[in-house]
Structures are given as C-alpha cells and as structure tokens.
Length: 146
Ligand code: RB5
Image 1 (cartoon, rainbow, N blue to C red):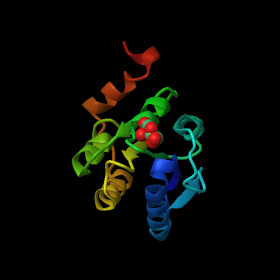
Image 2: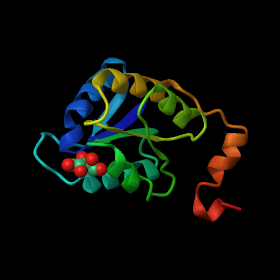
Image 3: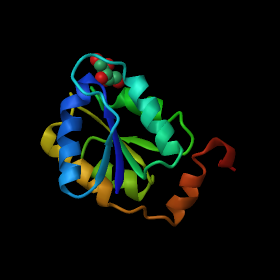
Image 4: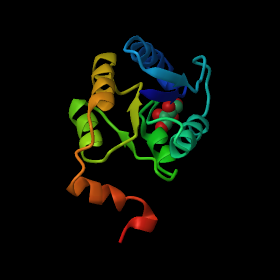
C-alpha cells in the first residue's frame, strides 16, 4: 500500500519509527517531512498531506503532532479526507470499519510507541465494513448529506 506520512517536531520521532516499520513490511512510504525535530507549524504538513489524499495520490495517510488534534482539525477541511484521531487499538479498528478513515492521526506526546505501532498496523490491515456504514460515510461530505 502507498502511505503518505507527515508530522511536526512533536511527532517526528514517532513518524520515523512508523515509516521504518511500514517500509520493512513492504509498503511504499512517502515521507512528506519534516526531516528533523526543528520546530515547524503542523498546518503546513497537514494541508500538504490532506491535499494529496484528496487528489487520490495515495490510499492512506498518517499525521502525527503533539496530540494529533491539530493535524485532525486541518486534514478534515479537505474534501474526501476522513482523518481519525485515535488513541488505542479499538479506536483505530473502528476508524476503519465504521468511518472508512483514510488518515490516521495520533499524538507523539500522548501515545507510546507500542500502542502507536499497534494502531498503525490495525489501521493499514482493517477493511471498511460498508453496508449501513457506507450510507453514513456518504453523508459525511456536506453536499451529499441528504
Ligand atoms: C506543538 O507544540 C503542538 O501544539 C502540536 O504538536 C500539536 O499538538 C497541535 O495540535
């Protein structure tokens, strides 16, 4: 699977860890930065990744800042992007099964590496349930809500 990844300074370490894991598992990773822990602004990286997901450049994206909150707020402003802020295996699984989330957001300052890896693996491996959830997900886009 092709996966876009980006962070800010607070998510940098976790981004590096997950990118390495994804590459080792045979995924194609596009690292949109940053390249160091120097302070950056999370909206710059979230807009870049979300624009690309919205354009269909990749199937999934991962965004990591301190809490994941800023990344999720920004990414969800882009059409077709369903960014889910997850904190554990359960939220990562349901983000895929019920919400068909295409961007996983997490916090480098709130989530330990063990849980982060678990969420990441689940997010990549879990399919969308479809059915009644498919109809609900269609209504997420404002012009399709009725
Ligand atoms: C950076 O200090 C922090 O505000 C950012 O990483 C993120 O948590 C914002 O939502």
